[in-house]
Length: 77
Image (cartoon, rainbow, N blue to C red; front, side, top):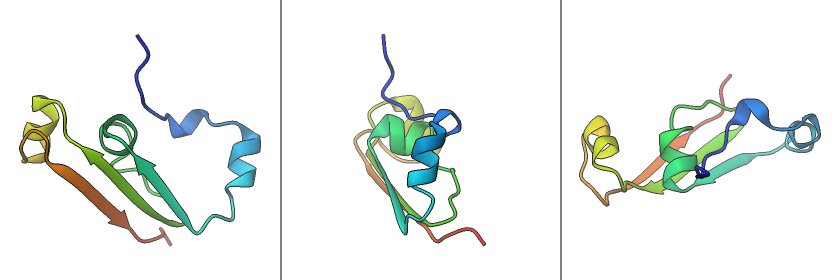
């Protein structure tokens, strides 16, 4: 089974280079935006968006099943 996550520590050097001047990163989906990267910090602004689909994640976040999560972070300085 393949999980729908993005491990940002394993992106290629080419992708990292091409994205180095981005103004905004958007991660969408429960696996990509919440479970694996909710607390990821970037050198540009970021927006994580997802719907909570697992009871354990809802409990961890202090929310309910099927809540939508939107987390915006300004660029790290």
